[in-house]
Image (tube, rainbow, N blue to C red):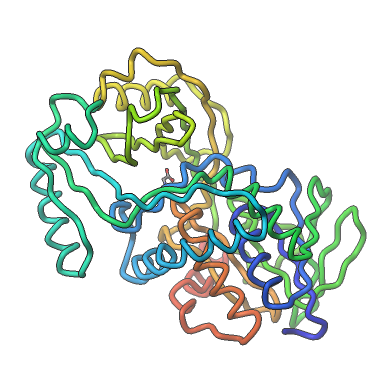
Length: 374
Ligand code: GLY
């Protein structure tokens, strides 16, 4: 691993911390830098859906990556829980996709056939079966598709767990860092300059999420074309068991947490601010209460917004760059929580062994230089 084995990761989100946790387990000396608090930003704002089979994905390479990451999740969570003592509450009890018109129901039937063709377990539910599975849904529901093996994780708990797990493995996490810049010579990365001073590193990994494209000091051919895609969300406090499973409904999704909060997400906006707007809340509440009118009686307990790191083709930027030692782990768009275990494993393989095959479809080289596509 490089010349002295020191790894610097920029971005203490769930991606950066997962990569740090994996590299530290393999013996690397790892520092993580963040201008804010760890596991905030998109890692905190997310809903934690683990849905490679019901989320719309851009192509087969992304499908494979997302499905492989879901398979890694149980062992990843066990390792994080063992190292931290914090249970991030992984639930893989399936995701329901509810249809409210017969066209949509027909599309769910087609999706079921596709899933079966690829060996996945899923079941088309009648209207009565859908209402038995989720009694709070509107009686207008036509039916649903229940996809086994998908689910959710409490991403805020996962963030806390990863911070503790990284620290238990000796990772140094520097938060609230000012004037962060990466230093290079003509061939390779040299280290990180910040208000902590200059710290050399043989490997620097950019895991800065929606801010990854504007990291100071980075040459244009290594800068990922990442843009912020805002998502507004809210939560409704429900009696336990009122909403049982992660569920897609028209215009929104529901993610029920163990403490009775029902997360309702999310808007998709080309914006870089985290304001919660009247329009955003209206859109979410309209979709939620149309799909499940019984929600009208309960308290909205929280509203928030986060910034997804989007890319021009909705696929992440992962792996090496034209400068030796400088790697990317960003651009995960709607699937950052899902992709944490696979990103950690593949980036650690790339850094440690130079293994890049699995990352080839996600190379930043597919975009040319950022300057070139601007
Ligand atoms: N993964 C769902 C979202 O980004 O809203």
